[in-house]
Length: 323
Ligand code: MLT
Image (cartoon, rainbow, N blue to C red; front, side, top):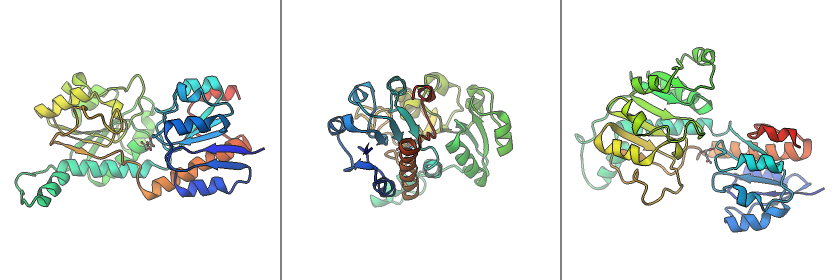
């Protein structure tokens, strides 16, 4: 049997090469495909490998006839309708390991850029100015870092924060306290505990009904005055209008944003254009090393699923009872 593997987003060549090496596979991977092109190619596909650029919603999934697996090359599966996949018997897997270091390092880059006004200093010097007084920063040393979400990336950030001699707390209802104790990071029982203590808050949670817009006017009011907020996880964790308002009053002294509720961000996103915000265009996972790892892991998921019936990092576990 020949399997058709459809890759409508850019996947690292290391992953494409692995797929091409399998005789039983026929690969469609022309680079970034439009939604219309993806839909046209879907009916014959047995496996779909996507990044965040393709939304596998119910409308798109309605065009699948033979699809067995979707692999999200990356972590977040918020662009995949998991219930609809389960209903259709499509196994959804992700590749959570490849991006961790890249995202943790980017978080730290954002933290330093924010605390030391590095982008503003760069822009000012390029404009011919020498504004040393304007860009007085704060040290990370001794500051309390509050991590919301203590999974792979949260833990990698925590490890790096220890080297900067920060103190740290984390909130994550899914992590047993003994794991955090082992890593030397106290897990606080409630988010309010974290808000009350943190000088810098970094988001590392997935978007669920419980975490959507977890940063909003009510929770910001519970934070320390002058708190810094970093979001390299998902834009939907933040209420845009509420965070923008708090940045304007200085309640939140600064934010560093790598992710947006809509990407690219809508032009009327109130978070855009603020002087005390550092922006990057969803670069968390954008390192050569991470993209190669993610490409290889995604190809491995497809090969193992279609040729060996082995499923790893399944995001819609109930489907396994149906296949
Ligand atoms: C992820 O979820 O893996 C990262 O945000 C990177 C990406 O969306 O590609």
